[in-house]
Amino acid sequence: MTELAGYAATDKHSRGRRYQEPPPANRSEYQRDRDRIIHSAAFRRLEYKTQVFVNHEGDLYRTRLTHSIEVAQIARSIARALRLNEDLTEAIALAHDLGHTPFGHAGQDALNNKMRMFNGFEHNLQSLRVVDELEERYAEFQGLNLTFESREGILKHCSIPHARKLGEVGERFLRHSQPSLEAQLTNLADEIAYNSHDVDDGLRSGLITIKQLRGVELFSNPYNEVKNSYPELNERRTIYEVVRRIINLQVSDLIRNTEELLLSEQPGNIDDIRAAGKPLIIFSDEMRSRNRELKHFLRTNLYQHYRVHRMSTKAVTIIHELFDAFMNDTRLLPPDTAIKAGALEQDKRQCGQARAIADYIAGMTDRYAIREYQRICQPLGPT
Ligand code: MG
Picture 1 (cartoon, rainbow, N blue to C red):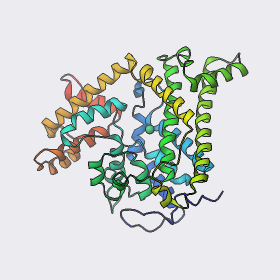
Picture 2 (cartoon, rainbow, N blue to C red):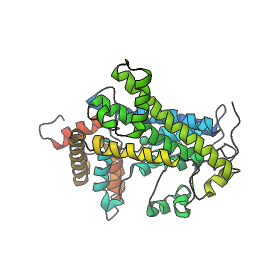
Picture 3 (cartoon, protein in one colour):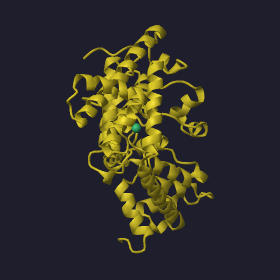
Picture 4 (cartoon, rainbow, N blue to C red):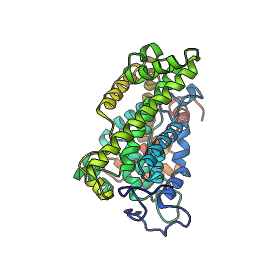
């Protein structure tokens, strides 16, 4: 294995765990983080959560789980090329979406809307809350007790009021410092993954077409290349050849530009990375603008497509009605959640109760949320 760069995250320079534990016998600290994430309940639930297409719409679309695995694959390739810590990168990638509600962004917006009076709901903060508080697996602590570096990577963005409450892991938002390079690259690997796989899923669903995408440079260049080399290739295989080129183009651009920047900035260690004042993992300007063009295309043609919008509207109804029903009568909640909500109910603004309900709803898979809605909000639904 190649030696890590001086500015990579290492066990030796880790800022440690919130609750001290003996070092792992046969693994690195970040491998242990990764393994804890894989064994968590929240990770298993990603299998039945929407990325863009609701889980029951088809078996071939990405879910949060397959998305997270694709992010981990892309992030690890970049980490290895840059001699950064692959284990940490993988841990962050696999955990980055743990806090997502059912029904993708529509679900998150709906829950945030209901939580407006109670400090809001943000999936990114929720991912951290899952690994810090909500997983109940260990005898001696709440959560998974991950290393600072994994937690820092999971918390991609955060408002100032929230950052103040988060202690050490929120400090960088107050000081405007940067997270590790492993965290920075995983954030961009997330973008590379969803931009590319949403093209694939979008085409598969028929909601967008090759003809439309030919107006987008990041698609049209590789598309023309594939067509020239393999004019007889069928459409499905052509799309796969294009999508893998879209991923490769972005990954190569990111590695090339980052290498150049690191060479000129000469960071010596991870503290230099944090103090750099700007991200050191970057795309070229040209790739950034191509990226933006593709994102804009996907937003207007896929995410806002009327068929996606219909599903999103149903999702909003489900989340809103479930939230209201539980807020009005906590006896509808399963006992362990009701106890949490009740224990926190003393709070005058019902903040604690609302948070326990938001945690419960956010933890639901798509189909579980649909079933709960039928059971609770539809008089003739199942019991
Ligand atoms: Mg993601």
